[in-house]
Image 1 (cartoon, rainbow, N blue to C red):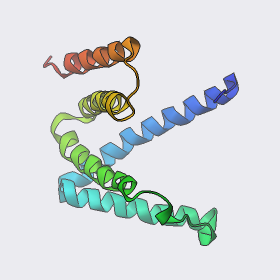
Image 2 (cartoon, rainbow, N blue to C red):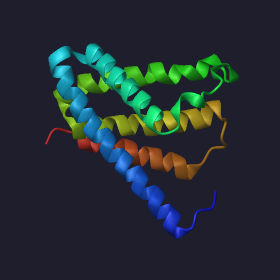
Image 3 (cartoon, one colour):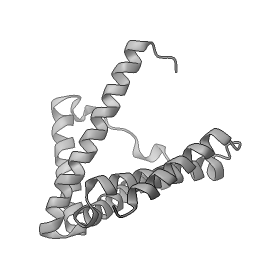
Image 4 (tube, rainbow, N blue to C red):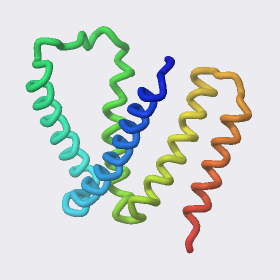
Length: 148
C-alpha cells in the first residue's frame, strides 16, 4: 500500500489518537475495577462497548448490512475472548503498578508475541533488524521496570 505524505500523516494521527484512547480506556477501566474487581469490570466494559457499538451502527449504516458470520473459521472469533482477558488483566495490573508501567510491559509483550507469531506461525524468514528491534524493546521494558 503506497500512501502519499498527507495520507501517511492522517494515518499517523489516527494511530496516535487510538493509542491515547487506549491509555484513557485503561485508566477508566482500572477505576471501575477498584469498585467491582477485574472480571466484573471487564464484563461491564464489554457490555458498555457492545451497547455503544449498537448505537453507532444504528446511526450510521443501520442493521441492513450484516456480515455472514459463518464465512470465516470459528477460531478467529477467539479474538473477542482474548480481548476480555486483555481488559481483565489490565484492570488487575493498573491499580497495582500504574498505567505507564502496565503500558510499557504490555507493549513489550505485544512486541515479543508479534515477533513469535511472525516467526513461528507465518514462518517469516529470520530478520536481524526485527530481532534487534525486539531485543531493544525488551531492554527498554527491563530498564523501565527497575525500581528507581
